[in-house]
Length: 389
Image 1: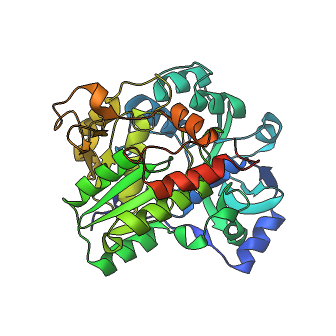
Image 2: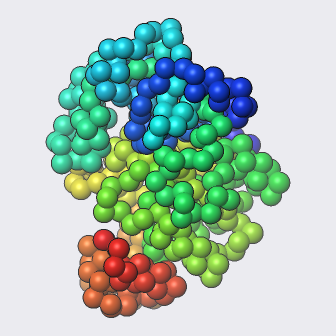
Image 3: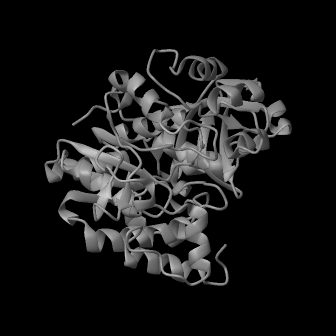
């Protein structure tokens, strides 16, 4: 099986009562749920080889060179912003409890405290400092004061008050990299392809996964369920869509459905590298990179993520599987891409997210060429409930 990124799978979780009591006795730093999710990703090995939030030196290297100071590829700076009042009180070399909703979820030993140029950070990571970009919005929302250092999760993280969707998602879907790797070994899978999604899987996505499965032993369908944009479909609704799709249209012996509790950054090409690193840590040998991977609006080129994935593929180890935009062709009477279909665009069935929402709100059925009827029914029931957006 593929080695974890950097050669070692990190595990920094201490569920002992003694460590929990220690956390409660330490001076506390209140952090946002978003950054508590990052802490979980660090401590459970999803962000291997990171052992903590990045120092200024590490951030500079990642932002400017796509590498950690030790030369390992890394694309997204994992930083811990705090309020200026807390930042002023923090002392380097001291331990603090990181708290969410008044509950200690981790212990950090502060190695560095620093300020950072948010405009430079945004331009390098998101290729824009436009505050209409959701990633840039998030950066500016939490401010320019940061602390860094290794962390240890404590027992109360198990209750996960910081997971925005956990109450509505079965706990069994939350598998750590250790657990997915064990699953793959038990199955005897040598090649595993990962599929990243933050949307319901429509026919084009299904086509990509099944095409990739022809070349691999198994597939990890791995929806991201951390913090996303407000107008994204809620994670629990998406999970129902994935379940009915897999139950009816996939060979269950060749598919694992699990969730990625990480946050979205909407960093386009850089985030494609980040997604590859995480899936490598989960044990995947390949990853599907489609059109506008992790993109938003018109900030990135359609296939920029694929180009960047190619650039770093040898260093990463995990291999990108690059697919063009897939669609249903009325003339071919099946799924296709521009590589395989000779027919004009008017024969292709593709619906934008806006059009899908409009049709669902109006009670219209989505065309079966676009999405499976079982998935459409889940979405229709959700959009027509009073609390749906």
